[in-house]
Length: 237
Ligand SMILES: [Zn+2]
Image (cartoon, protein in one colour):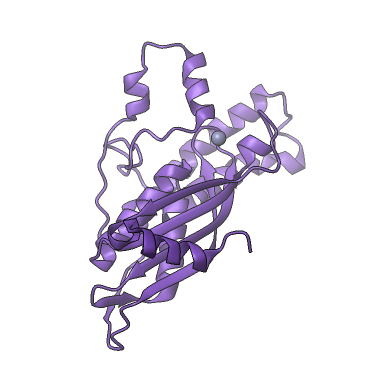
């Protein structure tokens, strides 16, 4: 199923274009998401991945040089191209809807009408405010509306949306809404439990805190169903 993407410039920037950089930086540290959709430019995919890699490498080289690093050193020489490839082909591959995993549905032949929970899905993503990782576990659940999906597809969907510059709130909602579309049901739950390196390795340097975000749709908004899900995932395990 093709994921619907709204192409627009970043609303955060538009809304605060006249304010100081300081305010934008503070908003970044608050990790507020501006929209459920990833803010993308209309021309986001006008050039190929190879053209993007070739364009990013010299910019990254310039950053390293401005920091004072000697790019003639053997250990550093390959870094700009390596980083450019990693950005386009790995870490941020999920920006392009063409890379959305195929989502084949099956008839629910077993008439299994209870909750299905896939817990402890590992995910790695990058904070869009600092471009450093945040990572942790995703727990997703659905109640079949007559269709079921291969379990590994749930992991693939989490991975796809993780491969973007992200904020945890948006990542959680994107996964939840995509599951609702794919599985043709509102009855979806997503919980994400993550550590943010921009919180632990810099700034306030809080090493022990985790961030938890949730998305509850349909029956999961009812107390009983929600509690059943929370009991299964028991995140203190
Ligand atoms: Zn951050």
